[in-house]
Image 1 (cartoon, one colour):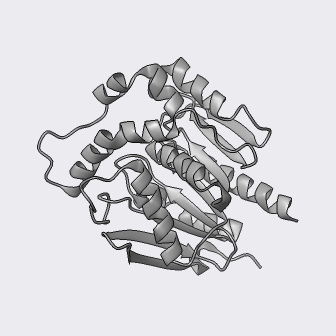
Image 2: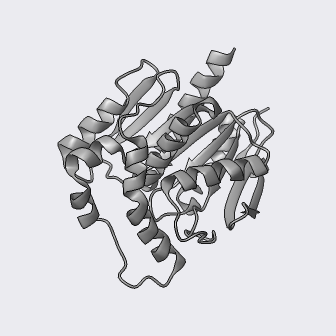
Amino acid sequence: MNKKASEIVKSDKFVDIGTHKLRVILSDIESDYTIVLESGGGMSSEAYQEIQDTLAAQTKIRVMSYDRSGFGQSELGPDKFTALDEVKTLKKCLKILGFKNKFILVGHSYGGLLVQLFTLQYPELVNGLVLIDPMNVKFVDRFGLDNLNAVTPYFENPTKNDEKAGNRMVDCFPIALETMRGKELPIEVPIKLITAGNPPLSNNIWSECHQEIVKNSEKHELLIAKGNSHMIVAENPKLVLTTIIELVNEIKSEKI
């Protein structure tokens, strides 16, 4: 019998990863897989709370969201903290929780870039990806990093953790690009990429780069969120939910 969202075992806690603590929200069901929800730049786990329990109930898979370092309720952590440090931190957090592999990663915007990086670093741990209007190296290289920085918030005198974390993210972004440049996502990993019907920046380049990310494999699929802006998670949670469920069903069917 399917569990209802109200029957999911929910926990909201802090995980000590050594250098600092991360806030983790878990919708727990005993399962082989773990769905990890990665929010967009400057955002927190709150972005996914409308769908998290329903996703766990409908897939019968545990679902985890969390606040990245410095955002939401998570501690800021080290002064120097690159995107590669972000994914190492996530991997360590998952291991502490007892989740070692079979990850289905969902990432929006900058979070979409992070789950791509996680997959490139640890391809053996990832069973599938849902990329929601993701930032990516192809776009930055064509649009220009200076042009992107010109429209990205940056705080002259940061006092709050999220301001410091935001500045740190911008400052370390070139390192992430260098780490990922020239690398393609594994063709064997199923990917669903949702691209905004109303792209946030340089429409043609944004859309073309998303098409290129998924063109190399029959297991990669592009979906257009017609009528939606970059804020797809907030504007169209139903599309996000159904897309993740479809990917999960495809992954499960391949294992039968």
